[in-house]
Length: 231
Image 1 (tube, rainbow, N blue to C red):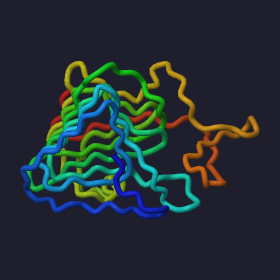
Image 2 (cartoon, rainbow, N blue to C red):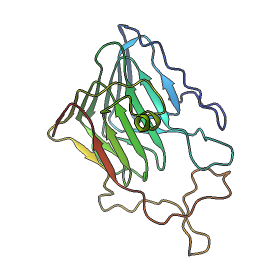
Image 3 (tube, rainbow, N blue to C red):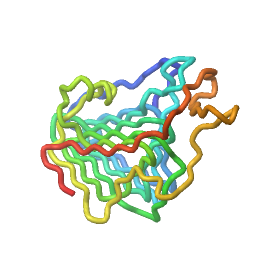
Image 4 (spheres, helix red, strand yellow):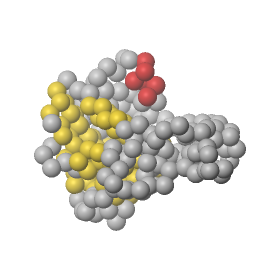
């Protein structure tokens, strides 16, 4: 499923009205790829179900010459449920799952299928809703996972979440048997390249002729923010 793409430097997501609605969206497939930026209007509940993986990605570059992408975004004023073997961001990319509306919202992750470490590294997954129930498997190998917003008025948080409408998380639950991981789990995952055997670069955008040298692997970070956090 590819959302608004635009061209380089074009961030085109338009947030839907944060209004009450009773529609239901259900998507079922062998593999689900959510790409770029899109929003769901008039849905109280949206469900994405697969026995394979759900991959989150973005292909919109901030400028023609940059090697960074705008974050991918899925915004809804309703509830979201993701059921998969694994849910993860693509290598070096950031994706935001945001459920914020006039009433309390819930984002739920559920397990379905055999989990394994994906060929992804250095990605970021940011999730915000009134209630977040993590009962599945979400991964960002050698990357960042943020579940919940503690202060929606914080400027750094607003920037991190691309100025989308936010809600302060009231509960974040990591259910028994769930997996929330930034580990490579012993896997060797390609990330970057070298042309001289000395300097190592990760060049996400093929048109970028001046990629930045890497001095260390991507940091591993998990942040849980909520009025109540249950592990």
